[in-house]
Length: 304
Image 1 (cartoon, rainbow, N blue to C red):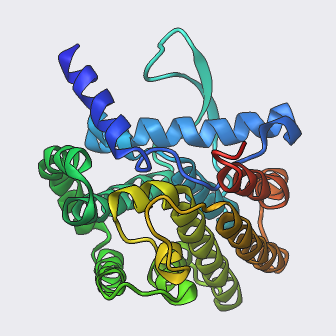
Image 2 (cartoon, helix red, strand yellow):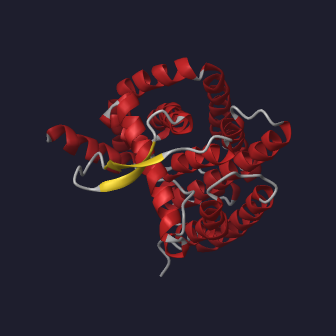
């Protein structure tokens, strides 16, 4: 019981490790399509538990569920679905994908790689409590990373280099939003394109990954803006707009919303060039509804 409580506290402090920004708009999604989406999320949770243990589920997020969904949609092989039981509530049944689904496993391993670099970054740059939580998580995250790196060494090497570039930009207090977002966006493009053999599809999915990465970086920066101003942590919008602690950020968030809108438009334009073999209704919902809804939530957060 104490272990679960400690993990809960760490989750609360780490915060943005858990949820993600690439989400469905549930009210606009048909029940059958929602069951597919929920099945991917549940299957990813189960795979993390099988491959890395309970603690790894701290990295579970909508973004990694989206990654698994996209990779399965591009695969020629149709994934098998069956009824299973929730790992946290054994009395609750849910749709699950087969245990040996390579793309759900891929997403679980990439989640461990990204969690490791996120925790290392938080140790260097975060406030006291978040730094302590990250230090507590680092030993086990290192073990998870070691296992994931062994399986995806080349991809981990690329991500490590891009995260170094990201850190250098932050240390230089980069004020250009496009430049600041580039390493994270490039990392997502590499992850999305992994394993693709069709050159045309690969170029499209690579650009889609880049745009999604840009969207995630910018919306995350806006989501953290008020808190970063309080703590003095790096935020590209704070630097770009010369913001100080206590400044009103309402207009900045509205301007950022326009940047996010343009990024979503580019995501949609790229998606419409992509040939997906399944889950089209779920992707339509995410790209045409979910991304905009999440943008509105973040931009209007704290507004009176």
